[in-house]
Image (tube, rainbow, N blue to C red):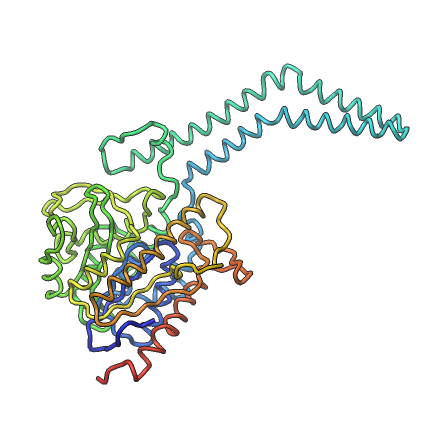
Length: 466
């Protein structure tokens, strides 16, 4: 539902909200906007929207929605899986439980054989009854023979538990050896072994690969260090900013160590000055902004990787600030935060955006008799919480935008059964079929036309004469 009138003369921004599978919806919307020739001056995003914003800002949005794009890559099925150590540990505990229950299962089997022999005896099948009784006796003898129950079962149980502990310890040692930070961890030793439950190596690695394919051009060089990719990206956008298909960009992260939201920008000179000099709120401005035009250009890929890390669910990403920045070379932990959508609305107003298009994959809040079945697994429940927060935050961002821009336009799905972690697809009980991530991309494309392009851009009643 549009709020205000649209004008291609005004400085226009697009804010991409949501995590995980929301990136596919963003890609579909951006495809429709590019196809319709909608003028976009600024792309802003957090979470999955960071990737869409980065690619769309350098005229590379087509890489997001074409057949070889990241949203059709098979590696996405591994996105936000349970960490390998926890998966192996769970299987080990299940094996230990099975070993512990083995004597009980054998007793149940023996009892069933004895009952069967009694039933057979009642119908005067003495030979068969005698065989069953013999099987029952042999089962009990094998169970309580010294090599089995007193010796083998306890050893197998201990072995399974040692394997579980060894996997957790090896994973913790590996994580600590790869951790860039050397600060001591506080808390119980067991929590160090368990760590964050979900692994965000994918989609983070997949997104970095896609970005590198865009900035490397025709070169077949292997993927360099993240800082080098960031420098190439900044050079590419800076050299072409103002050309068709190239736009300014704002990215949002949450800094756990400073307890601040961090916004990075690659902007035109006038917008860059307003972005750096703006003073509104407690604390120094330099603590909360990263200017990619300057020494912090090396952090572009760190923003991309950190944006894929969800609070609590996955381990935060470590970012080392330049020595000449406000944080003097400190190493901070960063992650996504759904409430960053509101912050991006505020920052977009600071850099001179006059009308805004809000894009989110979270459907509107529920109405009476709109409840559906709850997910039974823990991963699904975490996704449900994230999606619920995104719905509420999107409404807050919409409200904040109406007070800052002359026109606010919203593109969001009326129904989206895919949660943030459902990269393998999900059964949709509302339509009684399975929904997939590529379908969500197509849904974003269609709804951009239905909710914005056809009623607003293509309508002579709302578009001002040029």
